[in-house]
Image (cartoon, rainbow, N blue to C red):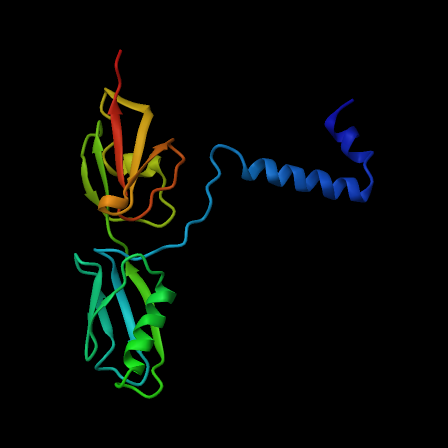
Length: 187
């Protein structure tokens, strides 16, 4: 009996259940990646808009300490905050004696770079592009050297002491600030 015949003999409820199982199977496939909520860190460029206050608005780079240096309120720690969490923190800082009803928007306008090292032709720092995977990162780095092992790749993700090592495939998603390391193949 073919798959088409098996499916056509199902009730509507069984069709729905089969579709649900199929979707779950796709989601748990090796190439499937969970979406990660983006948090800011050093090197990101952020546009902060304080509506009605053009002198307080502008583009700011997150410094090495993970802070934005804003007019009137000074440095605000934004490392490991989402843009919405940073917006709330900036709102609260301006509300504390500076503005009556601050209306704030925070958006990422340039992501921090990612790094690729090891057995690639041009290791280094490169601009991050949303949706990038390891295969894209290797291509940006000039491709694998003749000794590059596409089955032995890892990503170092996080900041300093909180950095974790993630075994990676060519389909693994790369995030801003990641270090992609391609190992040497042994013959």
